[in-house]
Image (cartoon, rainbow, N blue to C red):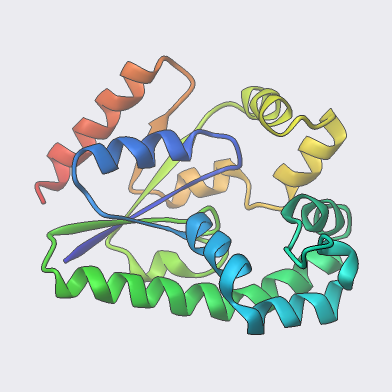
Length: 197
């Protein structure tokens, strides 16, 4: 089984690429989905988050408020470091379990979709890396629209990730997602043809 690492910057359109790969019947291990499942169901993890960030990040029903937690960690780099330190082992184990599942199914190719593929060290576990990229100005614009953020808040979130320019240098393939969706799909098809998996 070969693993294709898929990453990019926040709001660059990684989900568009990921969803298209799913239509090609290629399994996708999506780190964002796994995180969502963890913070919904893993009581041990939720207890750690409560102990670190307090009950203010939970609603009255005891459900973690991702938006509230996001506001805290993106406003304070030290809090983001704390969050990543808590989350990292849970995410790593869940990714490992998911990849092992697909290995047992004997699939030829699986996609590991992770926004922090390089930052978290997952790039070492994949055979190739695809980076989804757009211009910085378009990234800011899309993030502001998508998350209803003011420009300073959007810039703060972008600044927490490895710069796209750096990710592009480390990539095996780059998808320019600044054009129309058909152009993006064509680039994905070309990469899949190149991989011959």
